[in-house]
Length: 403
Ligand code: SAJ
Image 1 (cartoon, rainbow, N blue to C red):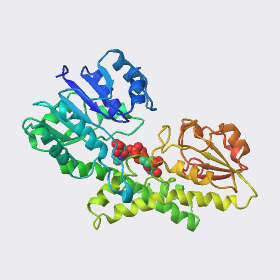
Image 2: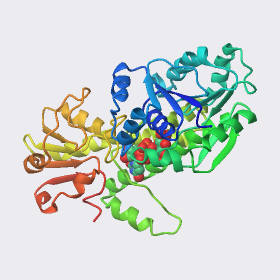
Image 3: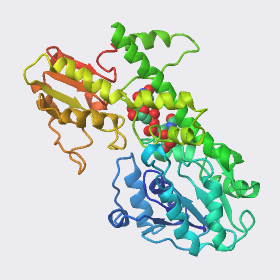
Image 4: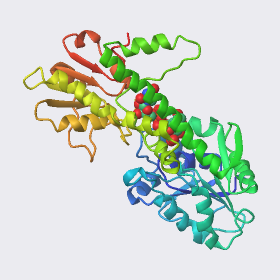
C-alpha cells in the first residue's frame, strides 16, 4: 500500500499537513499548488503558516524525498482535493477552485484511481466532480472511485487531529466509499463511518453550523447582559453548573474560514428551512460592530483617547486572520480620527492587508486609556492586573472580567 503515489491538490491549512503526514508514512507524495512562492517555500522544507510541529514534519518529508512539490499534478494512485471553498456575492458558494483542481487532474487519471474531496463543499459537489471526471472515459464508481471525506481538524492541533479524529466518508457509490475507507485506514486512527456523498457533505456543514449557532446564543446573551447590566461571564459560569447546560463563550464575532462560511452553504441550499442557521450567522456577523460601538461609548468621554487593541487573529495563538472579527474591529477603529489606535498581536507583526502597524505590548498597556481585548492569546493572561487598574477595559473574551 505505502508504495502508492498520492497527489495532493492545494497546499493550504489541510493539504500541506496531510501531504506531509502521508509522506512520513512512506507514501510518495506530490503536493500541488497554484502559488509559485508557496511551492518555492515548501520545496526548501519551509512553511508559511503557524502550526505546531508542522515545520519539522514538512522538513523531514522534503529531506527524505518522499514529498515533492510542484505547480502541476502528476499521475498517481490517489488524488486529494483540498482547496478553498469561499462564497461569492450574496453568500453563494464558490466552487471554482474545486472545479479547476478537478479539471487539472483529468489528464492524469488512470483505471483504479481514487479521487478524494476533502474541502468543505456545498451539497452536490462530489456528484458534480463525478460529472466532470466522466471526460476521463473511466467508468465512475467501477474504474474511478470518487468520495468526499470532509476534513475536521482544529487549527493548532492539525497533525494530531488528522490522524486521531473519526472521519465521515461519502462516496459516489458504495465501492468508492469502501476504497476510500481502506485508504484512510492506512493513516487515520479514528473510526471511519461510511455514508453517501450528499450526507457526508451535509454532515460537515452541520458540524460547523451547530457550533456557529451555539456561539450565536452566547453572543446574544452578551448583548442581553450588556443591556441589563449583568456580568455575562458570571451568568454563563452559573448556568453551566446545570448538568445539561453547556453554553459557549461570547466574543467579538466568529472568524476563520469554516464557521463563518459553511452555514451559508446550508442557507443557500434550503433558504426557507434554514432560518435558525441564518439568524445565527447574522447575530455573529453583527458582533464586530457592537464591540466597536462599545469602545466608542467610552472613547467619547475623552478628547482623543489612546485605544489599545489586543489581538488580530481569528482565534488565540495562531496567525490566521481569515474572516477575523478582531481584525474587523481593528479596521473599524483605525478609520476613526477621534481616537489614537495602538494594535498588538504576538503572532502578527505586519501584514500586507493591514493598514496599521503593530506596537509593543508594554508600550500599549502604558499609553492606552482604553484597552480592548479581542483575542485571548496566552501572552495576555500574563499581563500584571495591577497595570490595568487605571484603564477602561473592554474584555470581549472574559479573561479579565470573568474572575
Ligand atoms: N469562538 C467563540 N466562542 C467559542 C468558541 C469559538 O467566539 O466559545 C470563535 C473563535 O474565536 C473563532 C471562531 O469561533 O473566531 C471559530 O473557532 P473554532 O475554534 O470554534 O473553530 P475553527 O473555525 O478553527 O474550526 C472549526 C472546527 N469545527 C468544529 O469545531 C465543529 C474544526 O473541527 C473544523 O475542522 C474546522 O472548523 C473546519 O475546517 O471546518
